[in-house]
Length: 411
Image 1 (cartoon, rainbow, N blue to C red):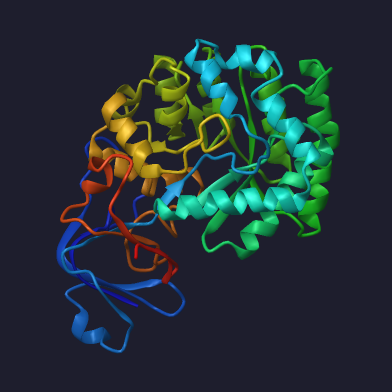
Image 2: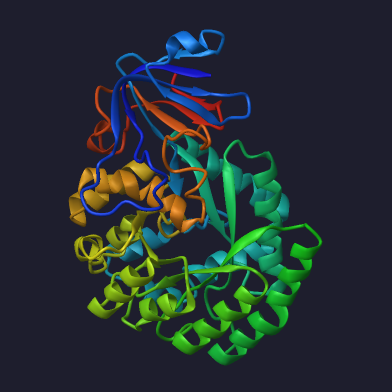
């Protein structure tokens, strides 16, 4: 495949960088082309059309070519309808108030445990299709609504089954510690995760039936606090799962320092991140995954994004797609980050490409347009790349390409 004579090719990087930081150079090429071989790998970039006339040619004149977008934090494997909670939030109910009344995660957990794997697969596939239309070519997917060994295994088996036939890459995360199961204390829930769930996850991994790469915990006051979070992340690491967890969302617990000390690859949310936490994450290069949709919907205090970026914390953006934040659109997420969280547009683009790839331990293969990386692209029917963010809630996405295959096109 040859993406020919694009008005702009936004490479993001030319030197194999892992991250981009404040006000980055996006390495934009004008009136250039990019060639992708039959294996879906980028083989050439620049004024190259004469060399690749035997390739399938896509005329990109007047259009912009960007790296495929990467959603590094989602909860797309769920069941049930929580639209009624939207009204409750508008009337002033907080996240924890809804949770304590049996709504939120607890309601979704009941629905997931009642649903069949086939029903979960259908819901998951529907969400993935909508994400693809919004430019996503790689999506992280968490369990976390099972709240038991059986329920968590069912979710991971669902994600595994769908990932095998998905046109985009689905990255699995085990989130057994998402909420306290009914009737269990924090300590009892910790013991269930460590003594029952994690051994079963390891067994299924050894049998090649599931392939989670990360272990996650909802580190929060009154749910899984610092010591419990530490214990669960360490047990997950023992079976080869990389720590990447929820932290500092509703309360300040110094979970950022915990993550830095444990070698976490990423921490998500971070509305209550402290200066000490910023320093720890910057020193250890822990990716801060910001979730503007959830902050916006729940009317939380804004995370200190500007301070994070300016202090050298590699910063990514994600949709947090789930029944609470029902959004599959990374372009809209980027718009929110720029409008509400003081991100520059070029920082936002890096946050859903190269930095998001780093959050998923994939910066060597995706996240930028460089020779040797996968041919993952979003093509905009627009004169400059900024239109991805500027055209709020209706981005001019013309085609989405994964490993050299067109997975969406606007007709």
